[in-house]
Image (cartoon, rainbow, N blue to C red; front, top):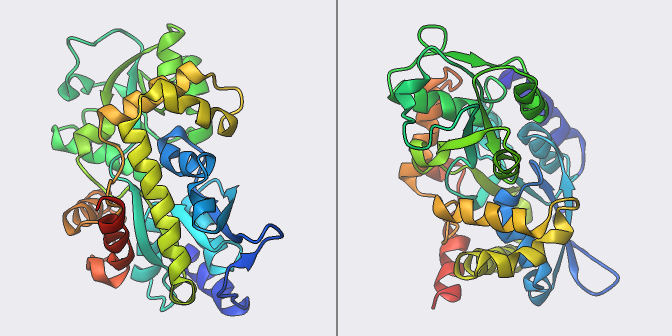
Length: 336
C-alpha cells in the first residue's frame, strides 16, 4: 500500500503546477492553507494561537481543512492543495523511502508522544499493568497506522504479541472504534481526548493508562511543506512557528479552565469543562514539544515503532527529511 501511495503522490506532484508564495487575503494578511490530519484537542496549541491572534500578529491568516488521514494530507501538500501539512512525519518518511525526489520537509513538531488513552470496561485504577492485557482483545486503530503501531510496540515491550497472547482487533475503522466498544466489541479500546474523559464521566468505561507515557517520546504530529515553499516564504514559516510556539507556551502556563473558553468555538458540541479536563490530561503526559524541534532520538524511536510493525523498508537519517533551523531560531526568540 505504501508503494502504491508513493506512486500516486509522485504523479500528482509531477502533474500539477506549484505556487510557491502564500496568497494575500482581502484583509491584508497572508493566507496559509493548513491541511490537518484530524481535528482534535490534542492539537490545542494551534487553535489557541489562532484564537488569541498570534497568527494575525505575524501577518498570517490560517485556513484549516480536516483531511481525515495522513495520506490525504500528504496528497494535498504535493498537489498544492495545501501550503502546510499537519500530520505524522511517517507520511513523508514513506515517500522518501519509496524513492521520490519530491519529499516535503518537516520544519516543526507539535506533539511529542501518542495522545491516546487506554479505556477498560472495568475499574482497574489501582491494579492495571500492561501485562494484565494478556489474553485480552483491544481496539487500537487501523493496521499500519501509527496509533496501532505504537500500541503494538508498547505491548511487545511487555512481552505481549498479537495472535500469540493478546488480540489486536484491526477490523473497526478509527472513527467507529468507540461505538464498537460500547456495543460490546473487545475488552479495551484506545481513545483520544475528550472522548476518553467523557466516556469515563458517563460511566461507560475507565481510563487505565496513557499510551504516550508508555511508548516514550516520538514525533507524533508535525508540520511539513514543500521545500520551495519554505525557501520562498521563510519569514512566514518562522511566523507560523512563532505563533504555534506561543500557543504551546500559553497552554502549558495557563490554567486549563481559563484556556478552555478560547477553544470552545473550535469544538462545537463539547462543553468547556470537558475541554479543560482534556487539556489537563495532555499536560499530565507532557504532550507538546516546547521547542517544536524534532530530536534524533525521538525520530529513531518512531522508526523503531514502524520497523517493529514490519512497515519500514529502510531507515533514514533525520537530516534527510527534517529541517530544525527555523524552530531552533524561533525558540531562542520566544524564550529569550
